[in-house]
Amino acid sequence: MSNIHPTAIVEAGARIDPSVTVGPYTVIGPDVSIGAGTTVGPHCVIEGRTTIGADNRIFQFASLGAAPQDKKYAGEPTRLVIGDRNTIREFCTFNLGTTQDKGVTTIGDDNWIMAYVHIAHDCVVGNQTILANNATLAGHVQVADQAIIGGLTGIHQFVKVGAHVMAGFASHISQDVPPFMMVDGNPLAVRGLNLEGLRRRGFSAARMAGIKQMHRMLYRQGLTLGAARTAIAELPATHPEATADIALVLAFLDASTRGIAR
Image (cartoon, rainbow, N blue to C red):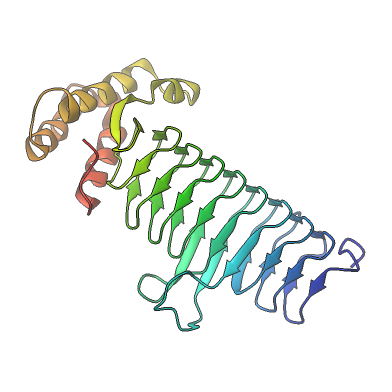
């Protein structure tokens, strides 16, 4: 294929769409699949059982699909799955999953992943997220749709970060962060709601009123977590426009395993 540089090594068995561009000195392993329109820069290594979708932009020196940094890993046939239209900048490292979880590390669609980001084994990253430079996701982390993780932020293993969260620069996230919240610091603190982000995404005033009320119940009224959850469950009666947002928060609270940042 003329769009694969002659110095690149694409091992037999790799499934590379004819429209894929591969830069100089890149190495692609035999169990890799890359979809149409994706560009892979120079000096990248893509290995393991890695599936990459369409129209991704992978910049130079990325390492995708390497063995997980987990002493228990013994070469099991685990996977890395990357969706469509992601931007993956320089020196990013995404690892395979492990058999201690579902065996797959997953990155969705339309994510903007900046330089030196590490996504460890068994992580699940949703769609339209932004991970700024040097953000680090330990194993089994979940980052939901349209979350923004600031540069130099570390996320502890098994932590869940909800949809539309904004985490500030150099934050230490060791507990689950409910949807819509704005957090930063070490120790981590909830500073408020990601209201500007919600406005930019077209949330109506009525929806945001319901979200604001959830924030008050969780963080401003002195309620226990159980009492706040009960009060939030009653909100659709007074904030029907925010019913889906309320359900999202309730589902997150039910799924939380590390306790929420409060």
